[in-house]
Length: 372
Image (tube, rainbow, N blue to C red; front, side, top):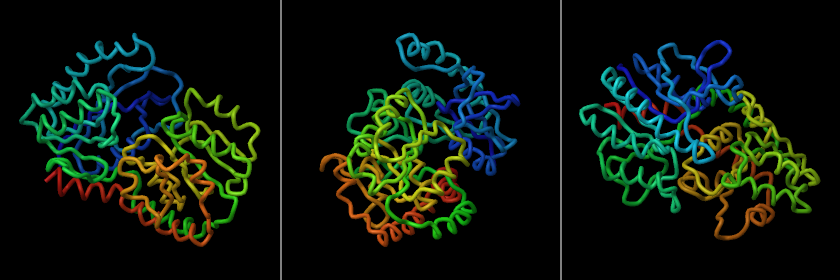
């Protein structure tokens, strides 16, 4: 048991009770880790806004302290230059906190990583590890992401946890599943998954940012196909983005019921998973999105891109893997024979996959490879 410092770019807000709230998936992960440390300090971005998105939550663990830094980045040159103002503040906090803690975790990739990773190397005596949540083998990485990967591979020898397993993987780079579920939760969801009925047309969901990179354009193109309503009855879009209104207008006249929910609380997202039989994510690049594992826990058969490590987990036995080089997503989906008995088999198999993404499995890996 010890004191852990986590440095991340996770957006935080202050709720009406004066409590810090962060992206729910990250908060739940830290709540679980807090059971195994005397104290966790989370150094991350704090927004000064009166309204907060529904996709954030406050911490349940009482041994987590939050330290906020000013927000940075966004559209426009001036917003991007704010990082130069934030960096000195960030470095002072890191220095002050690293003196007190026993170990740290830095969550990459993020724009500040280009500066923070070499800064952390100055504290060579301090134990720590890096969590790289993006696509480790992305061909067209942003320049800052390429620099961070190079530094994590070449500049230091602290452990790095990554999505997927790759050729020529460095000895200090460990394959980790990104946790998002409790084993006890899985047991509760199993009954709902086994009882879920599958019949055409299907009810399907998409969870993520409403943008082209996440594949929303491809889903829109699919929903414009004249006879798609024979396969899809309803599609739920959970998430938001600048293009939401644009997508809604394009789908006003299609023959599928398209519901745009905006951001939802975690339990509300789970309510969507419960009613759906399928899950769409035809994105350009991912690490391994937690939403695939969450949807899998509810028996939502995935229709997803073969990018990064996704193809190491999703295959013909538990889902449908789209290869972008072989054609458009709408052609791929419309060519599928959605045999109901096969869908049920895939449903059962994808539920088994979700077991790898439990917090308990994650902690077991940490104890064996990082915390020993």
